[in-house]
Length: 491
Image (tube, rainbow, N blue to C red; front, side, top):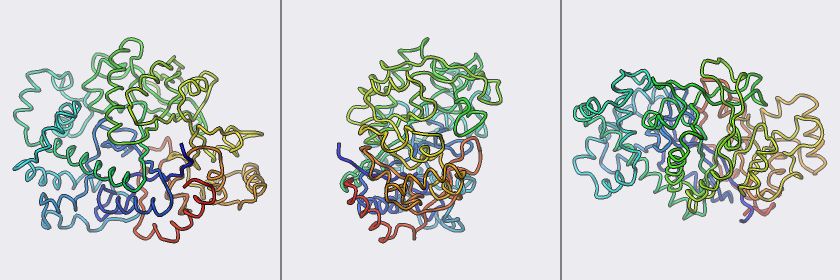
């Protein structure tokens, strides 16, 4: 494949009048900006409906789309919303940060009005969409029951709902048709709008890099409707949970809290579920980054009653056979391995044997002693180079945070290459590298500060909020990026 350049920008960061990015005209404008800048890739974060903490890595479903991303102006143009429905909906938002609380308290009612009008005369392709989404019935049911119980997690529901008692579920369905239809409508509209945007991206030479967390949220339709796939007790509580031991990001590790798959006991069913998941993703993306790839070699299992991730154990994962299965399930979509963290020789071998490109993060290259696998001369062609990921500071505050030794190492290295010791010096390192793809956070190109950080691992609140403003994507910026793309042969 050709050397290419891309930009990371979450959908929620796209400018819009309604407090959060959407799949409307500003998303199309961002694709135009990518095209003018010579970028061939747009990397997004997971697109699912987020739960407490608003993390796209903790979603109510691994298959569903986020209702918040449905563009309201498009619904108005289709006659599903009126000007009156949207009175006040575009007032008082901070253009720089997402206010998830306000969106949660207002967006459902607006979309419900659109759903009522939609079902008065649903389009011809609606039934085909429902038939093509085997996960949709469980998701709509889960979200409707969840809303009726004040949004608490499913293992706190009354036993008959927690355990999907058939008569209880049947009665609920018959008595809550409007609530269920709301979720069918939202998923139909999300996928319709996304696929339209995807076609526009492809028309403009842009491919989409998606992101699949290895684990799913405990509070999800996936776990509730597939309990046998996960390490849970008889009441639906996890016996062990996922995370990573102490590492670069945290002295106590990261306690994610996600339930762990029963790889050995339920191999066939776990494989089947993952196959459906990847096949579904292939309708949305051209590439799919598999988050925490090393968990397929071995994963950190933490007793569910632990307060930190320190006291866990490594357990053997499903290995190469499973990776090959995923590649077949992906069809024409290509996979990327997020191989960051503690990499043992067996993890490195699994990556090599899989043939998948791994990740190289430039911000990791200057904090140790001596040579680093993250310095560009250590790269091979089959890798993806990043300035940093969504879990890292943007480059400018990262530079400000370096200790004297690391900062000296960075400055000496880039000066030796004839580059400036700043954000664009690091960007030029990535552009010049042998990696077939180089992908950079939008914040790095804008040289923003620490308040634009996407996520600070280990901190529950205040993440996933930064947004572009309407004045950020200037012609001067696109010209600057295009000149680099051409200079380093990534066009």
